Amino acid sequence: MKIEKLLVEASRRNLTKEEAVALLNIDNKSDLFYELIKTANRMTREEYDNKAYIFSQIGLNASPCSKNCKFCSMAQSNYVMEGEFQKTMEDIDDILETVRQLVKAGTHDVFLMTTADYPVEEFLKIGAAVKGILPEGVRLVANIGDFDEDTAQDLLKAGFTGVYHIRRLGEGKDTDIDPARRIKTLEVIREAGLELYYCVEPIGPEHTYEEIADEMLRAREYDVKAMAVMRRTPVPGTPMAEKGMISACELTKIEAVTRLVSKPSRSMNTHEVTPMTLIAGVNQLYAEVGANPRDHVDDTAGNRGYGVIKTIELLQDAEFEMA
Ligand code: SF4
Image 1 (tube, rainbow, N blue to C red):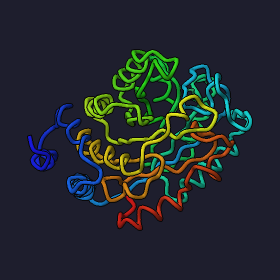
Image 2 (cartoon, rainbow, N blue to C red; image 1 turned 90 degrees about the horizontal axis):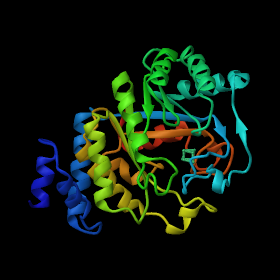
Image 3 (cartoon, helix red, strand yellow; image 1 turned 30 degrees about the vertical axis):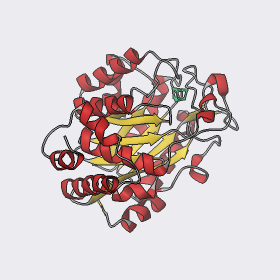
Image 4 (cartoon, rainbow, N blue to C red; image 1 turned 180 degrees about the vertical axis):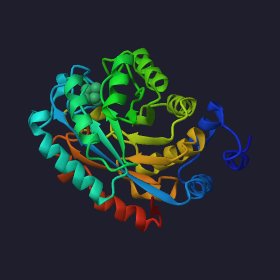
């Protein structure tokens, strides 16, 4: 089928993997590239009523992680962070003050992130305390290692509304995690009724369009409301750094195709913040605080991470209204 026809049909029906791959093969310098981003932009502005969102993520620890993802600054096998720290309930006053500031500045969803080895009991206690100060309507999202049904129930009891969890590109090859374990956790999240936040990541130059399309379709299969794509940041000192990074244009194309194929019902994001994607279907950005697998400093807020104010400015500059 011709690409022009596919773009017309994208808002009317679900596209197949082969059709997603055909869209991903669009030449970034062609007129069709602009037809693609025009379509994604129109779908986002119309379907989301031109509303935009800020999600804020707090990294609670920086410690060598046993899962050894070859792109991560915190992998045990290639730890390149400046130092180590672990926030616990002893630091709860600081954590709550950070959350208050993020919410006051305009955050819609608060994410708490840890490495895979962080103790779940402590995470649940921190989550419950954070939930206690969140205004009604602000969602609380966990970004932690794999877990089973009991932990899913504990997350709900603590007040979490959702979980960020993905089957990474290169899972099991570039990480020490069996892809089946990631899928099992996705099933647990769905069964528990927690909202799943999904992302095609970490996209590098070596990933095929077929692999990338598989994750777009997986998100649609799980009926994901908040979707994202992320390009891999070549963190110096990590094994994957030498493979380099895809361009912002390529990321924009992948994001636009993901918007069309995955059909998230609330929001679309590109990570890290890439302003050109704001006219290609993105209506949600992340503000980041604390540890970050794509950074080497304890607090990414002063380095790679954007703050809430800056992300709101970018969204408003792209003529979105904050939800
Ligand atoms: S990406 Fe997550 S699971 Fe992988 S090494 Fe880093 S902290 Fe651990």
